[in-house]
Length: 213
Ligand code: SAH
Image (cartoon, rainbow, N blue to C red; front, side, top):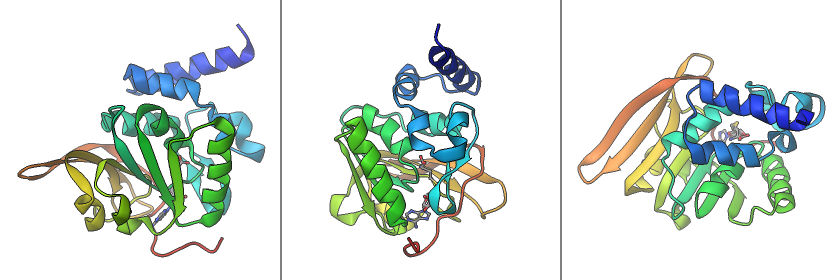
């Protein structure tokens, strides 16, 4: 077995042992090379289960958290998905293998530009990445079957809840920044919203407005 294969095997084993058991999610995480989304010094640690720094002072999430959030979305190949917080583009790339269409937005245009380059290089043609304040969602493309927020909000943003289809699922870390937040799964039903608390997490905060670069 090559070093590369062995690294992937250990990566998948770590994901499984942390609760990522959905076969389709694991297949997507096997196919998308996290190393491509981590630049410079930290690239060699891409297959460790830890968050890593990316440009604009942001972070690429811990792979097991990416896996658990993706799993919680219960994606079908017909789904139109909205991601708030493109960051490196890694989460969006995973989503793109499991859904029909992925819209992803970030408040930093540099991150969006770099992510778009990667999506093109990797031939991921069903992702649209945009620079915007994602707290307001993407009204022109709503409603969405699934919404994933990869920055922590104090409450699930109202516009995002409004842009979720009935029967849809939203996953969002909720809590004050710099403390432990809770990963929440919101399901929209005919009668309203069901909330399920999944696990403690720690994300960078959802900020207002656009970033400097
Ligand atoms: N999903 C990313 C990691 C996201 S880190 C990945 O796979 O790499 C959180 C991201 O949320 C950061 O890039 C930050 O710029 C972005 N962000 C924070 N507040 C935002 C907002 N209001 N609208 C859009 N993006 C936001």
